[in-house]
Length: 162
Image (cartoon, rainbow, N blue to C red):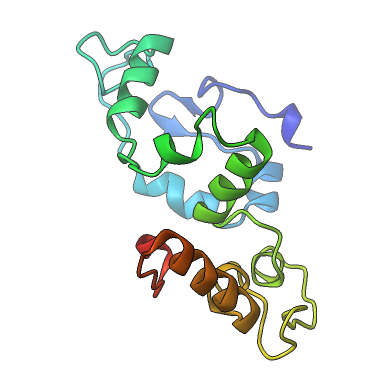
């Protein structure tokens, strides 16, 4: 259906007039209104894509990498979890926890998999990543024991406290 449409504007605009195929407007009824909101250029010029994040306007792999690299947030905890002293499987678990990518009932429901939810440890509340690792009474006992061993005061109100 859509693969039959031309991939350029040739054929859609001719003699400064819009020429939309009937089957295109039939499949996309709101398209006609959107197209007529666009002002047609007076002079005929060829279009080109422009990458606005560098001076040449040409998209290169280096330019895209530099753009993306400068916009990444600085995460101080990453160097701690990706250490040679920590097994990669545990680093991956911590990374997934911090990015909200663990397959908990909460995350599965956000992705459209509706399940009845209950923490399998305490059987008291909805299963979330934060509850499983920091709020469940069983886990709180483990954190309290760990804090006494290290002689620290550990309290977690949210993920950022980790």
